[in-house]
Length: 180
Image 1 (tube, helix red, strand yellow):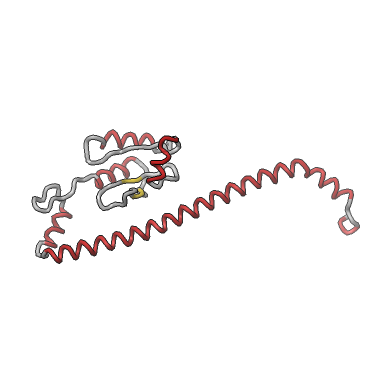
Image 2: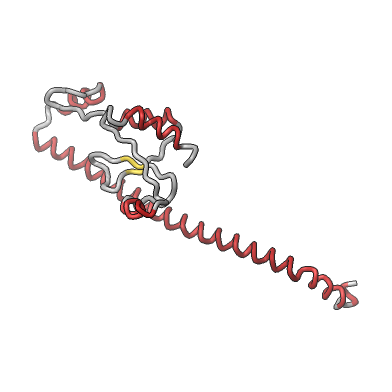
C-alpha cells in the first residue's frame, strides 16, 4: 500500500480534472469509510477498482501491474471518450474498422449482435464474480487457519519453555532399561 501511494498520487495528478478519469483513494481502515468499502467489496488492501459503462455497479477489480507506467496506460485506455458512430468523433482505427464491418447491418441484426455480446460479457462476469467470491472465502479461511497455526505455535513455544526442562528431568528419572 505504501509502495503504491506515490505512483497512485502521480496518476491522480496526471488524470484528475483533465480527462474522463478520476483517481481516488479511500482509507478502508478508517471507521467513516468502512460502509463504503463494504458496499464496493473492498476487503484486502490495497484494492484497486475501476468503474464505467457496462461494468458491475460495484466496480471491476484492477488486476494489471501496479507500477506507474502500466497503470497510466490502463487509465488512458479506459478513460477514452466513447466513439460516436454517427460522426466518428473520438473513434480510433479499431472503432472505425468495426463501424465498417457492421455498416450493412439492419436494426434487428445490430440488436442481435448487441444482445449476444452483452450476454457473453454478463455470463463471463458472473462466472468471474463467482470465482472471485470463492477465492475471497477461501482466502479468509486460509488466513484464519494461518492465524490459528501461529497462535498454537506461540502457545507450544511457551509451554515448551515452561515445562520442557521438567519433562527432560522426568524422562531421565523414569528411564527404563530399554531406553538406556
